[in-house]
Image 1 (tube, rainbow, N blue to C red):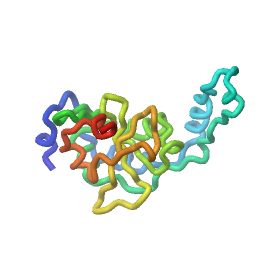
Image 2 (cartoon, rainbow, N blue to C red; image 1 turned 180 degrees about the vertical axis):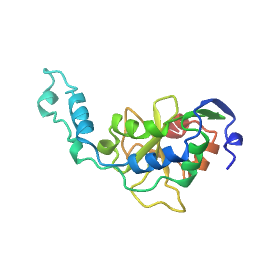
Image 3 (cartoon, one colour; image 1 turned 45 degrees about the horizontal axis):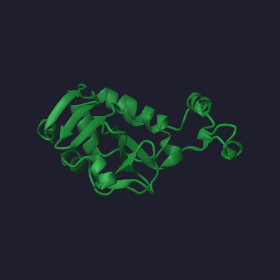
Length: 184
């Protein structure tokens, strides 16, 4: 696919991912959490309720040791895109993309606690308004693609997520903003 012709605007992009880095990425992105990652997530948890709030006593931190990351392949169309741009900012019409680099994908998955709030979901980009573009990997792919959801980072959950595209290419060629689709 000629990615140069897909987007109306390329604000910036990283160089494409080299094959040796691609192989490393593909073997690392969905490994089980390390002890260090678990400890870091545990340290970051805070009771959001003040002591005067009755919910303060009910708060229980979650256990990231129970999290799983989908053991499914990434779409070939996305891997092709990574060979073109290992992260970057692009726009089509009113649809804006901030694609994570291969090195950021796992980091963002864990930072936003997707395995807790949306098990089986893998975020790969944002839209600049706090919305994530997410593969729904709860079911096997169809023709090398997963449905793509959009969900706001402050309200992660399948019940409030909306399907924005059936394929990575369809997402990239779309022109309606994620906000308009999510709140439409």
